Length: 586
Image (cartoon, rainbow, N blue to C red; front, top):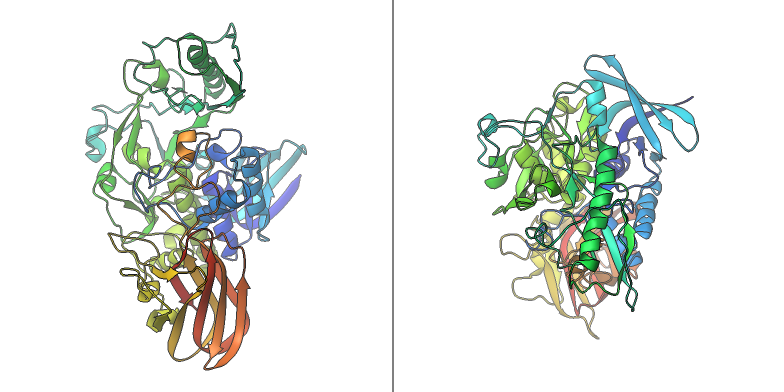
C-alpha cells in the first residue's frame, strides 16, 4: 500500500486532464495525474486515434482554433512529428507532463473507490496500479474528474444526468419529445496503407456483411482511414455496462465495412491494406455531472457570453442517431451549425453537491443537446486548462470551487496564458505594455504596431489585432515598446502568429491533413532578439533561434529598471514578413 498526498488530484489523462494538470502545476499546486491506460491522450492517443476537433470545425470557421496549452502541445507535434505517428504523439504528451516538476504521473492506475470525509466532500481515492500490483491511496484537497465517464463523480455521490432530456426540460428544439436514457455510441477507427500492388482481403468468418444499400447514408469515399459513423452502443447496449460487448460488435462492423470496400465493388482499394484497426473504442457520451448551472441549447445557438466565462465552444450541435450504425435508414447524425462561438461559465465545471470536485472533459454540466457541441476534444482541452488554473487559485486562497469568486482574476490569467475568451480583453493593470507607446520599422495597413497592446491576441470580427511588417528578406524588422516612465520589470511575453486559420491536429485522415502545413506554421517568427533598455543602456537581451511556438515567456534574472523593450525580427518559418499579436511586460 502506498499513500500519497497532493493539493490537486486529476483523475483521467485525456486531453482535458492533461491540460488541467499542467495548468494547475504551473499555478504552483502539487498535482497527481492518474490515468488508467498505459498512454495519455484518451481519444487522441495511439489507442483510439481521433483527431482533435474544436470551435474551428476542422478549419471551416477560420481563426477560431483553440490556443493555450493545447496549442503548445500541437505545435510541439508539428515540429517533432511531421509524419503524424501516433506513437510519437503519445511520447509528446508524456514528455509535456513529465516536464512539469509539480506533477506526479500515475499510468496504468485504475481508481476503484472514493473515500469521503462527509456526504459532500472527498478525502481520497483508492487505486490499483496494474503494472506494479500496488494499491495506492491518493489524498488531495481538490479533485478533478476528467475520466470522461464521470467515474469519480458517480462514486462520490455527485448528481448527474444520463441520456436525453425531453424538449420541455430545457425548452430545447433539438431534444426528443420524451426523455430517455439513451446516449451516443462508441466508435472504432482504422488506417490503411498503399502497398503499391494488389492486396487481397479475406473476410474473417465472424465479420459482418454490408452492401452499398446499407451504407447509402454513410459517406465512404475517403478509404484511407475511417469511420466515425461505425458507432454502436447507447440503446441496445449501454456504453459503460456493455463496453466489452460493444467493442466486439464494433470489430465485426469495421472488418465488415472493409470487406465491402475491398470486395464489394470498385472503391479504388485494390492496393490498400489494413495497417491498423483500433481495439479500444472511442467513447462519446455517458454521465454528465450537474453543476450550479446547466449549459443548454439556447446558450450555444445564441452565442451567449457569460459573465463568468472560462472557456468557449463552437463545434456544431452534432447529435448522433440513437443506436448508431444499426440505424442504417437514418443519417448518422444531424449538424446544426452555430453562427458564432459561445462561452462556458465557471458554474458548469464543478459539482453541485460535492464541494471539492471539479468536472472536466465531456462530463461538464450541460444538457444532452448542448453537450453534443461541448464534447469535442479541443473544447474539452480549454475547459481543462481553465479548471487547472482555477483549482490552483482555490488552493492558493484556501477555498472550495463554489467559494472562489474572483472570476475576473481567473479570466485575466487565462488570457495571459493564451487562452481565448470571446469578447474579453486584456485589462491586466500589472501589464506595463498596455499604457506604452509602440514604434515599429514598418507596418501594413490594418496590421499596425499598436495592435500588439489592444488587448486581443487573435483575429476577431474582421480586425487583424496583430502587427505585420513589410518584407523581412535581407531587411530585419523591429517593434519597440516604450514606457512613459521607468518601469521595474522582470517578465516579457509575446504571442506570435501561428496561423489560426490552419489546422494543426494529428489525424488519420488524409482529408484533414491536406488542410495543414506539413511542419511548423510558416507565419511563426523563427529567429529574433528581445532586448530590454534603460534609456540607451542595454540591460538584458535574449537571442531566440529556431522558435516554433506561439507563446513566448521570457524572464529577466532579476527585476530591473527599464524604459523600453525592443523586438528585432530576422526570419520566420517560411513567411516573408514578421507578425506579432501581443506584447506584455510585467
